[in-house]
Image 1 (cartoon, rainbow, N blue to C red):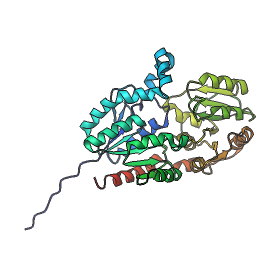
Image 2 (image 1 turned 45 degrees about the horizontal axis):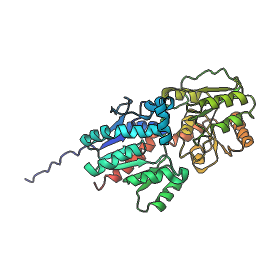
Image 3 (image 1 turned 180 degrees about the vertical axis):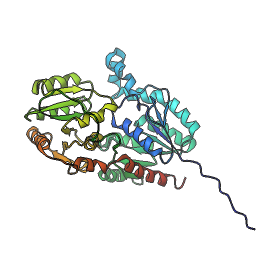
Image 4 (image 1 turned 60 degrees about the horizontal axis):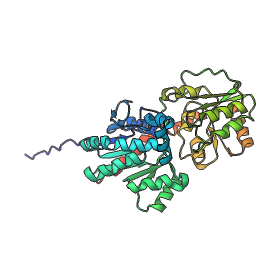
Length: 379
């Protein structure tokens, strides 16, 4: 009688997703991406999200000082002022320094097959050391794209990720030119269609006419260019602007909005992560005039909520928006105002939701799954 060989069951693939700011604040797209990616990959693998606060089903809270917890101290104290002068983004420096050893020691015990840092160089440094100690492979998504001639990309490539994900083919082509042999894929961000939808409660704003929403960090030094939408809205009759966000220049934007639009046509507010779907459903048009936005998750969130979009005319925005919105030269205030007026007066039917459906997290996670399987094929 021949013997039947009984193979041992294969061990589950372990993936560690890193972002200390997850659960602490949701002011950046990387926090949301890390959380949502961890939840969707957990369907396929043994996933742990290492973060600052309990969130979702797979999070593991580890001690450190995430950037959100140091923001107030850095903004209001003398020593914080010195930190701001010494470092471009001191909150990220503090986060990287305080998370390094707690996260590294935890991962040395976990021994993940793949480590997926989402907090820029802080997580990449941990992943780089872990790779050399236990052989974990590094998967990394560069969210800065080619901003500032790829300054952030060039810095992060020094950590030599085993596979790099970027948002579009143009960036893939540039990476292959700059770093021949680097494994790289173009995978877009996703949107959680179970959270962002046309169904649910809405806010009742005491503002004049139809409503235009803009969401972003209120900082004149970044690439969001929130002042452009305020100036364009001053030329749009019978409509109001809601500016959702926070930042060091909040007072400046409130003053500009009230000066050009008046209090009956302008409102600034800050909402929690959980309140954002309700906000998107409460307005008639969404817009964000960012310069060279690497992706722009907020456009997808608005579309999934049934809200058409007006955005800058570039290849990434055309890909995201499709025929569910309008692209224009947002630096031309008159043209921007005309596009906003047209979007407010148009019947978009189901185009917004259909376009958002092309970027569902379930579909995006499957693309990452394919990359992960390829990364581990020869391990």
